[in-house]
Length: 111
Image (cartoon, rainbow, N blue to C red; front, top):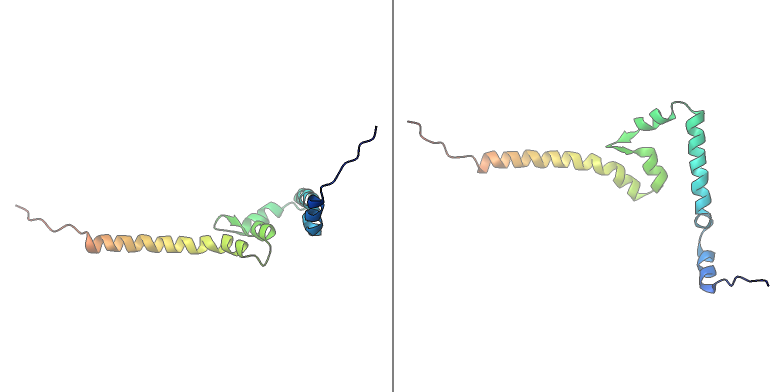
């Protein structure tokens, strides 16, 4: 007895609309993993070189590789911490100034 697999027309229509990259995404991920492992073995100082290009705890090559060169997410991921830290430090200075300016206790008389 032979069995035939019936394909769903809606499923084949969805697969037909996918780009080549999306159709073979698991293969691309596996290829990238193998390439990363091979590069790590063949180039001895690669890990320290990639660690040197870290901004605010975020690796620039990883952000660009994950989101793409022209991606707003990569830009926000790398530039975001560079903007957040100075803004937070500035807010601390403003709050310290406001505390001294508005919440200084009145001088008390000493006996």
